[in-house]
Length: 319
Image (cartoon, rainbow, N blue to C red; front, side, top):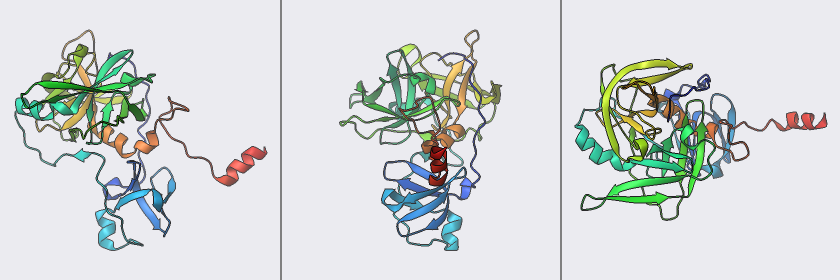
């Protein structure tokens, strides 16, 4: 983790109103968010903003309708059982708690991400082994391991290392990566709740948990200096919380124990000048993770482009 230049890219927003969007949970743990245009016996048609997708019912684990659609009775057929959300969002008005108590409760959900070239931090977003870290922590790496720390009955820390780690999605422009632990002996993991960086105020107390310089489970505390620090065309949370190499990808918490940002860099020639990616960008990344799906055919491409229509493809081949 260092203070480095980031390529800029405009945030892609879907045209659909996601406050009233439908959610289609797929059997491979992915999901689609958008407006269901039609429901057929063998498939459904979903407008996800940038394109319209036809999803076979055989690939669907569940459908959650928006409140507006459910109350209007517009469903063309019976709904499948609703699948659990991929991550947990915080309450509208969370209550503050003591940092010491929060660290004891939340510390096991913060992990260390190791590669042959270095290390960073990360955190689980659900119990099934999906975790967030920074893209620059795993950039160009094919060998990734995750170290998880848990407390035994005597209060001692046990370290478990998982080496079957898959890159699920990346957004290098917002410096985010979604990983999945796929070891056969992996248990259910403790995970964190995602809060709201929009609800923060300048001066609010925040704290970080991570592995600066490899010192696992290090806690640092500070305040929000500004919510809209512009660097290379992107907006970051600026904080006095100490951020050092190894903190990259770790969570920045509010005093309710909710993640409000992902720590990713600092100004090396100053103190108390740390920066974090707002959690709203993290939630957008997770909500649209299929669009950022990692591909071994083109590992630097953060977007998945759909194949052209059959007619267009045929004409291209003919030329």
